[in-house]
Image (cartoon, rainbow, N blue to C red; front, top):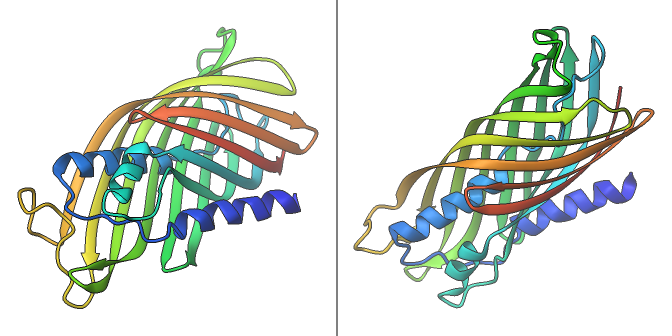
Amino acid sequence: MKHFIISTIILASTMASAADPQFTNLTSDDFDSIANEASANFTHNSMMGASKLGTVFGFQVGFTAAQTASPKSDAIAKRNSGSELPKLYNAGVMAAVGIPFGLSVEAVLLPKMSATGGDMSSTSFGLKWNINDVVPILPVNVALRGVYTDAKLSFNQVVSGATATVENKTKVNGLQILVSPMIPVVEPYAGVGFLTGTNELSVSGTSAGTIFDPSYSSSQSEKKTVTGTQMILGVEASLVVVKFGAEYSKAFGTDRYGIKFAMGF
């Protein structure tokens, strides 16, 4: 467990310390790419399947960590001799509580973490409803889950000859449909999601100029909303009170891999 916690912190710190990627002369298409990859990265990921959490009541508490491919953001960051940004990361403390009627509430929290001129924070929530109590003849678990994320990533870079702060705020909400077989110990699951991500990219600092291409915007802040579907494949193993999870998802055209360690019943 100690090693997992250390790995989680390292993953989060790596993201926060993305050493001065250069976001300069961004076009509308560039911002689309950044918004898609950031939204995929920060989408709520408790790595829990479709089954109910507990027979009547239940809980889980643990840690999650994930990495998201970001080839387009990487190309943008390196375009003006900035540092590489081939992957985005997220991690956090996960907690979930199951209550009667197949309902459960989930949260993943990453408090503000800072490293090498950058910082990152993220809070996400899920509300899941296992519908098998309503449709008991189903041979599999089926659940609906609403998700919401509020995240922020910032880093320093030189803009118009002065050090400025570039910040991207990401909000993601959506609905997921999850399915898993009714088997003990190991629960493989699959799902689809319908997501909307809103990203606000801005630059601030003394005499900060704009980071956008003049043909796109002369403002110091712009906002993008992207929509897309999500495919989810995962597995959760329960060994008495210890839980292990792994999940792959593809959202907004971007791949993400995650792991979980938790305890609960």
